[in-house]
Image (cartoon, rainbow, N blue to C red; front, top):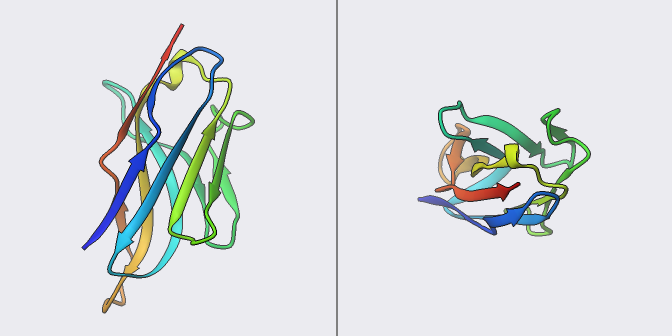
Length: 121
């Protein structure tokens, strides 16, 4: 069993900041990429940012320069610092991890339950 638990969502005014956190736990041998996706009502889930085990990062154009993704020292945690938030950032944010389960030779994608971020204008 592998679980991703997110925290840090909430309601914030336009221009404000929030930090999302996600911790992976369970029967994991290794975690490669970790990232954040979001899904607004009526829209498809989209990549926000991801970070590889080695530290390289990738951002959606819409958040580059405003959001920063990082991993904790334990490598099983990922954070998303969100600054200068806009109403269009309103969505459910999902944590993702690409991990190798214990006893398996196949990488799998795991998802958190999602955390709501609402930015008021």
